[in-house]
Amino acid sequence: MQKNKFPASAFILTGGKSKRFGSPKWRAVINGEFVLERIWKSCKNFEHRYVIGKKKPADMDKPFISDKLEFVAPINGLYTALEHAKTDWSLLLACDLPLVNTDLFENLWNAQDEKDDAIVPYSNNKHQVICAFYHKRVLPVILSAVQTRNYNLVKLLGKMNSSVIRFDDDIRFWNMNTKQDLRKIINYCT
Image 1 (cartoon, helix red, strand yellow):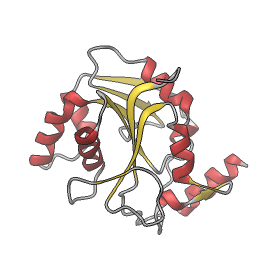
Image 2 (tube, helix red, strand yellow):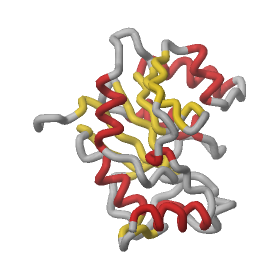
Image 3 (cartoon, rainbow, N blue to C red):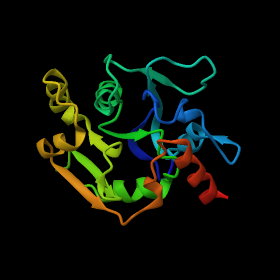
Image 4 (cartoon, rainbow, N blue to C red):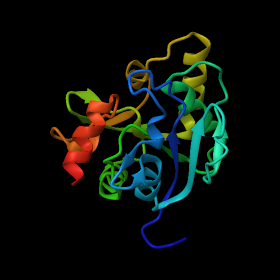
């Protein structure tokens, strides 16, 4: 294992419908690079990296796992990630957060306590549940939530031993939901 590697797996979610964005967000380009490639590189310090989505695009060259469940929601990605994880800890990461970086993941990782089930950043007035670490032991909680159609990950934090790490209004959590959001991020990056 290389120095500074997290003994964890990173799972990048690409399975959203992208209704407001109008096209797959992971294919958006910032400074000549696909968003997915930017995020993939930011996860370079993980033992394992995967992309999760509905169906692997023919031109994708990353290790890909198809969603285990039919519906579209972040809990589907978390369930799929925890089912496939080869490590105790997994990072669930949405592909609409193109400004995340290795320092962010290191801050989260270093904040964990041995009793934690989840390590969740809180920034820009919300829990960033799709940029958070989850321990494999929460799989039964996630499975129960899926079976009872309780798909809200923020509400599920109350059923886990969660550490919430506060970040001020942090640009790394700028969410890319629309083309206007993309333009704002591109302007920031140039």
